[in-house]
Amino acid sequence: MANLVYVDNSNVWIEGMHLASVKSGKAKNLSEAIQKNICDYSWKFDFGRLLHFTGGEKTEIKRAVLFGSRPPKNDSLWSAAEANGFEVVVYDRNFSNKEKKIDTDVVANMMEDSFTIVNKEEDEMILVSGDKDYVPAIIKIRSRNIKVVCCFWSQAASELKQCVDEFISLDEFHSYLAIT
Image 1 (tube, rainbow, N blue to C red):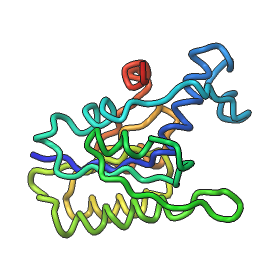
Image 2 (image 1 turned 135 degrees about the vertical axis):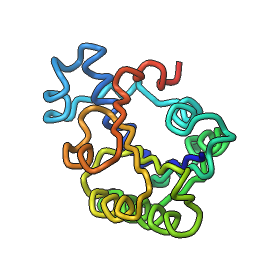
Image 3 (image 1 turned 180 degrees about the vertical axis):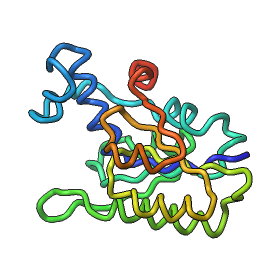
Image 4 (image 1 turned 90 degrees about the vertical axis):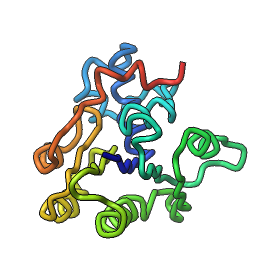
């Protein structure tokens, strides 16, 4: 069995900061943190721990891809991700400083891999994101008897949680996944 891991960097980081704001007392609860966009900006996730948690031992990982937007030139974010075993896909932000192309490229990669490198009988595709934009692609992948797992914070879209074979909440591993 092998795992293919697809991570939406901003999505997992921003929602992790919302949860961190509750744990640090900056927000009363997760609903408030999300609605008022209260984040604990000191919280950062450890790429190596995230990959190990979601993908298992390196021998069990067929592919691990981290998708995100280009950081400032002096930022070592993507170097750290690559050093921890991720293939990194980076896009420039648009003129309004918004991320674009991330979700669609995650979907494109998952669909392509489902036809080209996934062994249906043994492999699992693991999505680390919480958007319901992924639901149509996951339904199509699962219709071909490929197992899809979503690992994300508990605030993932309920429709996404319902359409995967298994949903694993990262909440109880929040401290483990943090850079210490």
